[in-house]
Image (cartoon, rainbow, N blue to C red; front, side):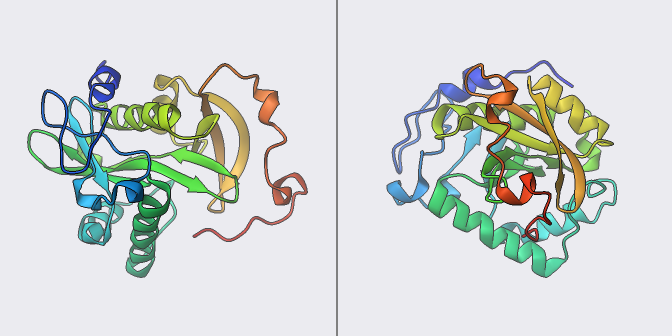
Length: 231
């Protein structure tokens, strides 16, 4: 894990205009709503010191299939076959088009090598936006997950109309629990996500008592009913 903090580099590139790249190194920032600018998804990037992140699209199907073939990578994730990956990538494209954010492919800046995925995802069953990450096993231990998640977390809290952003982490996923701590996230609640137990971590835009959002969960959760099926 490195001590690198992408925030300064990241915020230096806000103020994006279609077709124009701003900033010292040619990086651009994600617009608040991609559709408002008529931007093609392939022109959208979020840059941190070592990473460049672009919206996940159908073109990323081979990379995602390869990522999910590693049993250690998917140990705490929802298993997906090829059809499920296609649907999820289509969902990602729709999220970017309608919400202006979504899942993203993560690349190493200097080499252009695909490292994994990160980004922000809205979950209607919780009415929450989550920051998530999954990286190839051979690049674990280099701080990439922390760097990517921090960039998305800072951007989301700065630009989205949300009071907080979550991370849903399996109780035995020690590495991701450590990432959440490094991101300054707090434990919000225990829950079930994709039919697996999770500890929901949270980071607020402003200081808010955890109890202030305890009753914001949908009725199926407070009534202990079965959750809607995962996507």
